[in-house]
Length: 258
Image 1 (cartoon, rainbow, N blue to C red):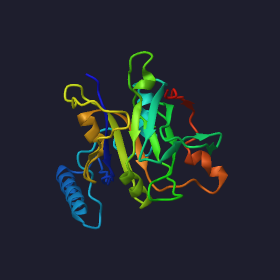
Image 2: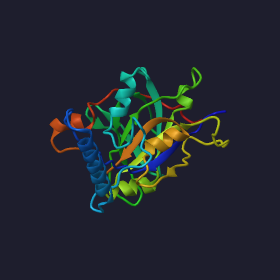
Image 3: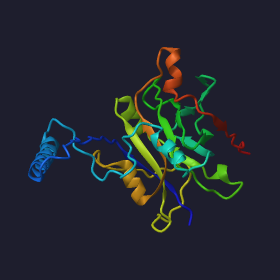
């Protein structure tokens, strides 16, 4: 059965707990008293309406609150992913155009951009032609933490689809951060429904639910897309940091329709 890539949409926050140290020679009763105090302090902080609530159902090792690039680099360091240019296809509402940085600048955007992106790297791409937002641009990031294993010679026929909706883009223009985790469905529980590359069936989850943990429970996460309102810096010296060091990518030219 062919597995359909799907997306989890969410905004995740994290509230790290406090860590206390105690003297190894402290008496057992004092240790228990301190432990109870720490536990009570954590409960009080969690109940404080002025403090953010901890994320529930967080992934034990990875979560979407980590900075871009951490997950992919950890996968490479653990030997779980080998260097590979994974075909990725970008699509969105009618009229939107996508482009990747090339030689320090963006060229003419494409409505259905396809490129080979390296697993483990973070790419910042540009979106223009947003509906009902003349002249507006957004610069999301895509982080590949996995790859697909298409039959030899059919890699570009089954790319990782990154389908962004008009709602996603409008949320970003309003100053919100939209996080999408794209995953391959579990073949044992996958929906038996044929989808086109530009089709999208996102699953919206509550803000306090970690998108990575949800995607991991439904299949195998392979990409994280973060859409915000951040723009390129005015100082050219800061652009390499903004574009995560300009990781290499391979252009994929689609055959012209007859």
